[in-house]
Image (cartoon, helix red, strand yellow):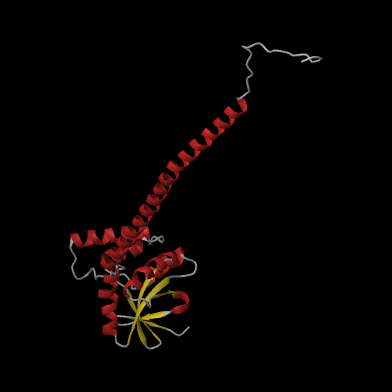
Length: 227
């Protein structure tokens, strides 16, 4: 056109747009995706490991409690009825188990007496052990109340075994023979009450220091004194 100047670019001239910023964003996105993938893989493994550790700890505690229950049953037998080397070794083993797991090791004199000529009292040693373990005292799971001792005895043996909580004890309180599983901590009581409620939905947890602060051993049960 007249009066206008025209400029022509060489035909081989090309314009390039920097893409460094876009590539940098792509790299961060790749890192983020990789991090999420690693986390998705690691978290289930970590949770599985933690769950296994907790389960192992619970199993060990259950095993220790069963050993203590067995040792207690052995030491409650009169050692003078059958004084044999096998019986003596069995009682020595029971003393070692209680010393190891109760948290309150007994003196040498007490251990010797239990092996030679003394039966283990029903509650005294147990109370010493549990009071040292739990400042608030022992805990109980009450899963039955009967008008007769015979009915309560069935509950603390057959019914308790069906619940999977082991043998329990009978406490007479307010004129009723109560079936109670006594344990050393609130956490253990909460675990047991869940099992008991499958068979007896009305089962509940009590703090023995307030529910039955003092008791007297009777023939086949414990008589709770009035608070």
